Image (cartoon, rainbow, N blue to C red; front, top):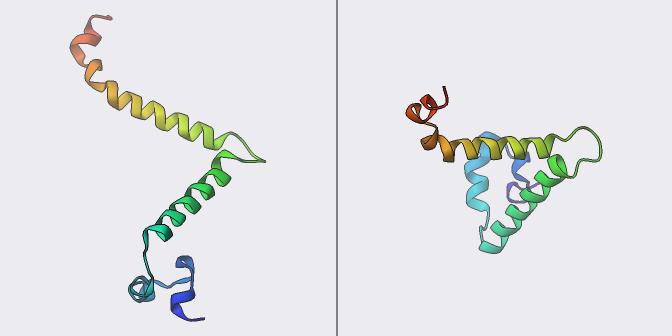
Length: 84
């Protein structure tokens, strides 16, 4: 079909700049695209009907890394020296 009617995943790399120029990026369409991406993430990793708890463990691991980053200033060498 015409290039403007193709989905992003169906566009070849050489045609990408032409496809981007032919699209109309309104705030409503960008919001709808963000909603579709979030729904796809939830369907793939959070609301899993089969398999393990991959989505929840990924969120927990991200939270642990973020918390460590926030508290890294408090975990300096002088404060750790008091523990030993």
